[in-house]
Length: 444
Image 1 (cartoon, rainbow, N blue to C red):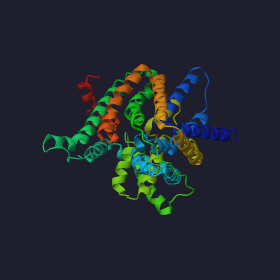
Image 2: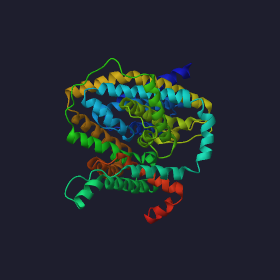
Image 3: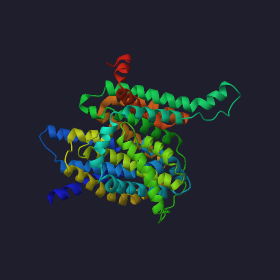
Image 4: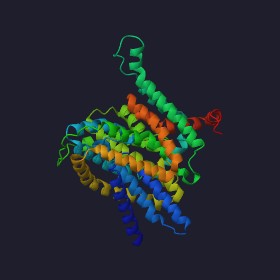
């Protein structure tokens, strides 16, 4: 009974912490979890052992709370992470029409549906079928990644071409977004080779070596953009009901579960990529399905990738949360797996109940303050976090990656191309010529 209350309280505390942190634009829960892991490792070095029954459900609660509630800044404050980028355009339509609260709550329903999908659909079958699927697919991951990379780059099709006189002006207008997208992808890929092969970050925080780069690619550019160009937000209405039904939820689970599942299972593929693939595969046109489906996809991506570490006989490590967990504890038994499923269920309920009051709080805040100040405050927190965890070397990496992350913002290309930092090095390494490239770059 004591262990039960320990797990319950730890899970609720982790969920509450991440739910509150999720309201700050640009701050990622993995950064906070990294600081937590460093603290736990310091305690362990000092001879104080924290039992897994405390930190495992707490970390699960943090991931679940983030997956459910980071929609709030994505819709209401305009600073998404890469997995929320497809929520932004429809979500901001809701915001600009005074329906921002409704948009956030629709994604919350999607997140709750994603929790049911993981617990009741994937949960019973994952230990039996996922190890078999892994054995079949593990030799084919390299070409699967190359197909995904090709699709991402090809879908960044030339736009425009209607401005300026005939000749180079029209050519530049048509191809600038495509060229910016290609430049972003390959510059991010080059940065990825450097960081993943010979990271300048101190070895004591090696599990956070990619963190400053991700902060620069995704968080800092959006904070800067909000500080420079934030517009006035119309008065928001708080509704008592949502125009959703069972058919809408099932169709959202179909599209979002597919996208999030692909992102959770395939290496280096994130929620934004999974959402892009699933959106083309399922061709759902309803705006509410689009928003709710991204709520499902985001939840399945973050929580599902973390859960893969707990599946008996599989032990896949996907996502930053799982890598950090492995530095503290490696789950191997069915007891660990059922602990994870139970913690997901508890945390999902708590996070969903917190969605409405926290969304109302943020709406109250933006009614009274210019949210340029919120983005400035978030930027300060991000810089302090990078300096505290990775030092000035990490800050230098964040500055360099910010320059790359600003390219899609300035030229209107997809921010998905920033994921070249993971996709390109991993695809090259899996295909067997990653070492050739690192030698050519004189990294080895």
